[in-house]
Amino acid sequence: MKRARQVDWLAGDMRFDNEAFFASAPPRVYGPARDPRGPVLTPGASFGLGLIACSATKAAHRAPAAQLYQGHTFKLALALATRLCQRVRILSGFHDVLALDTEVVPYERSVTGMARVEREAWASRVGRALQPWAHESVLCLAPRSYWQHLSGAASWVRPLAGLGIGQQKAALKRLLVDASSLALSSGQSS
Image 1 (cartoon, rainbow, N blue to C red):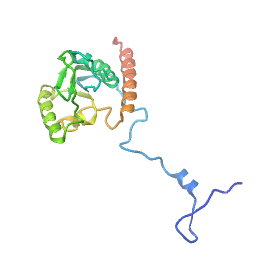
Image 2 (cartoon, rainbow, N blue to C red):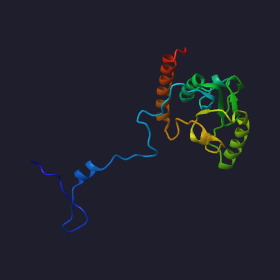
Image 3 (cartoon, rainbow, N blue to C red):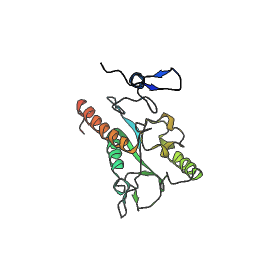
């Protein structure tokens, strides 16, 4: 029988069994406890307003907002929001809030690149633009930098909060599958 490796810890006769200690330690958890599968949709999930973030990758020409933004995360969020929400709006660092059919020329400006004062002014303008939907259920599929200064954001459903970009993409893909299966099981066409 092989004896567990012992390592001197501190000094004197005190011994510390590393293997036994680390085997008994609970796994580290970073951030809030989450469902291991990620965000979950419930049957009948429907929202009055869906908010998605714009994308740094854009078409090279003027186009409706839904077609201008070309980023993978944007496309996944757009697909999910259009499936679950009555109305969808795009949060833009340059145009504030855009309807999907609003014609937009390509631009270079991001919310994350703004100074704090500038971002707070942007949030104030966005808050005023979102006022007509203040009493609606909101599905926000935008990163924290887009909603952190917006009043009312605490009551929004934010399934991507706290996730890195890779985790956001994986969660959006899974949520799209969930939304499709929920729609099929309830007899709705997708």
